[in-house]
Image (cartoon, rainbow, N blue to C red; front, top):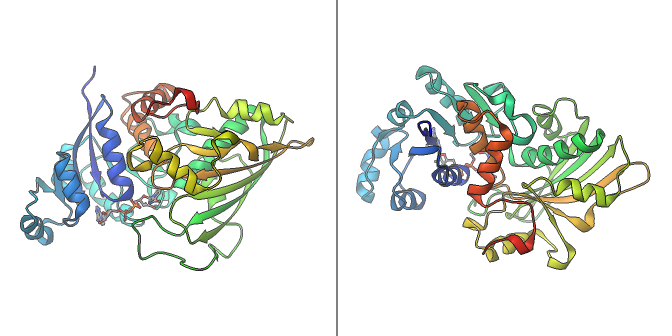
Length: 351
Ligand code: NAD
């Protein structure tokens, strides 16, 4: 096998720690290290896992890490120099700042969905546009909501052609550890102006899809819920649609007998399956919700685990940008296998 791709994680929070663990599961990648701003429980676990920790701002952070008994391998700039590619998982807007460092050191980098499309110039979803990332210096993996929409719309557009999509995103207020976000007791139109930015964001990956989106924030931390309505060019039966979606391992069709009635049940299912951090990286579609009328108008509900659905996409993006795998289908197959993702057949799941 060719040399392993050396990956560095700049930013080690909700997304960064999951990408780091996913990199560790790939036989064609190696983790150079992770960059932290300060010592905390996430740095402690990273150290216990044997990940090299680099400091974002060593002048400020070194004494704090020392006091915590955590050793630092150097600055994040030193980490970046050692890497073939950087996955930037810093908070929204900081990626754009960090880009200056990647440009200075002439290193390729992946940004996350909190950054604007223009920061990278290419936005990515593995099924939809793997080829467009091949050989690029900067690529953005689109946000959790946009990833969920792109997976679904790509599959249905390919099979039946999409005339127009209308999607409502019922968004989680914050991540489970995020005490500063809300609402605690309200439903917040976010944004109030319509349509929301999610439609244009889908168009950065699937430019030809006509789509209007709206979004509200809710007092929940577990998952997003999407209500998706679309008009198709063809008029498939609901059984056809279900069979089409089942061909995509990153889309799960939940049968009624599992008695999964809410996002709480989905996450509990992840716990029962023994998924790391109860992550549900697949779009979770309620089979019962899939309906198609005689004019080809389709409706469904899908739940999106905001903390984890972008993780397999980051792994594929690394392969595309570095050119270690030019075939998107092969990369996705490898990523799915190593992360334990697969077409949803409850009897084939291993516990
Ligand atoms: P987070 O706040 O959980 O983690 C960010 C980490 O980066 C923190 O540990 C922070 O200390 C660190 N950091 C701060 N400044 C830094 C710097 N200059 N250099 C390197 N690291 C720095 O954030 P997150 O939720 O993991 O989000 C990261 C990115 O992923 C954002 O663009 C976000 O929009 C996107 N995203 C988040 C979610 C989600 O639901 N959490 C889903 C998809 C995409």
